[in-house]
Amino acid sequence: MMTQSNVVESCTLLRVVMALMGISNEFRVFICGKTFIVINIKESREDIKPFVFDCSTVEKQPSGNKKEGEDELTEEKGSNDILAFSFSASGKYFALTDDNKRLFLFSTKPSWQCLCVRSVVRRCCSLTITHFEDQILVADKSGDVYAFSITEPQKQAELKLGHLSMLLKVVVDPSDKYIITADRDEKIRISFLKTPYNIESFCLGHREFVSALLVIPKHPHLLLSGSGDGTLRLWQYKSGKEVQQWNLRDLTGTDLIDKNKKFSVSKISVSPTEGFIAILCDSFPFIHLFQMDQKSEQLMYKEMIRLEHNCWDVAFDDSGRLWTFLQTETAVVTLYQLKNGHWQHIEEDQDLKMARNVLSNYWKLLKESLGTESQYSNLYKAVFDNMASYLEKKDKLLIEKKERKRKGQMLTSSSSNKQLRN
Image 1 (tube, rainbow, N blue to C red):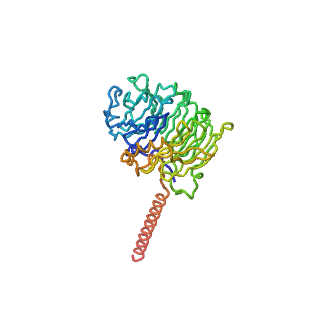
Image 2 (image 1 turned 135 degrees about the horizontal axis):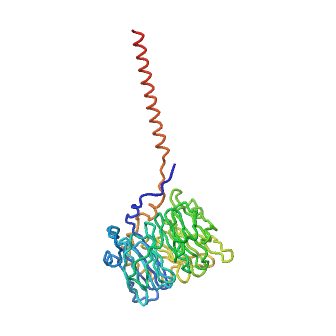
Image 3 (image 1 turned 90 degrees about the vertical axis):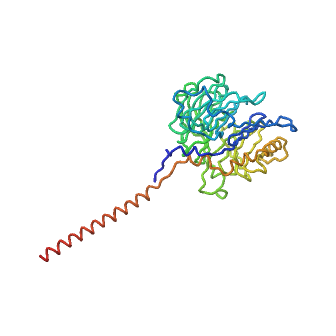
């Protein structure tokens, strides 16, 4: 039996309507398809007006950002669906990319507005904003990372680095010294942001694509990674040393899940207060919660929250409360808070009620993401059983050999009989 990792990547271009959630300061952002909705929880409850943006209302190919020879790369038409987004560290900027190969940059204060729209060479899988808030780093399906200037919107994008396979995640450390990239072929690469051709290390060990990365803010020398192999790993990323590994399937319990269903880590979120870390796996109604021990710098497993429905996304707010974005109309957003050492579900909360009231008006939009194909299903290495084909060919050759031998014996016997008659 053998595996084949270089599956044709055009399969990833099938439309997958993703629902995502982002939290920064007072803003709660909910994304579905080509639209995102921003709720400011500090606004008056009586007169709340969410900011709503539809990518399809913007010209397909912004001018002034394409290089010579890129026209053939941008002919492919998309559905305006949002593929990735990121807030800046201060929450001042918000960037997103869609499947029409466009990069949008928004300012969030004093009010939300679109600052610019630029072209990207290929569809992007991940993006992040540097902590100095001067660049947007965009990782695409061909394995390249481009840097777009925030302070100089008309400046051409700069190619920073490239992998041999599709990039799935890009992050930077809090000092903006390192750029960390993860790809479909299980590799995590640590490069210098200013001179990305200089590679500091590789973090190797995952057996499937790497789908989630997080540099722990209070321990900036430590990196968390999640993968399609169902493991969560802690690294000293500058040296590439693996510190800890957790099998999330084992933590969930075999009695609660289909043993044949694959685990893909879709989100790693960290609390700004107590050092809790939430792990969400794609298409599973569970959230695993860890806590970083400040002295030993080891992850400690705390508990598992079992949800009533599958979850699109999770995120902590500034108060350390855990928000979940669920696949149900009745409680599309839920809230959990740490009480007496355990995470408990909260219903009586004004911020939660505001979010639910706003999103109830957009359920028709959100339900487009129900039942769609997982964005990770086509990333797994295809497995081919060559043994069955080999045995089939072997049997066929044996039969042919026996048939040739039988015919040869018949010819010999016939010749002998003729000689005897003569």
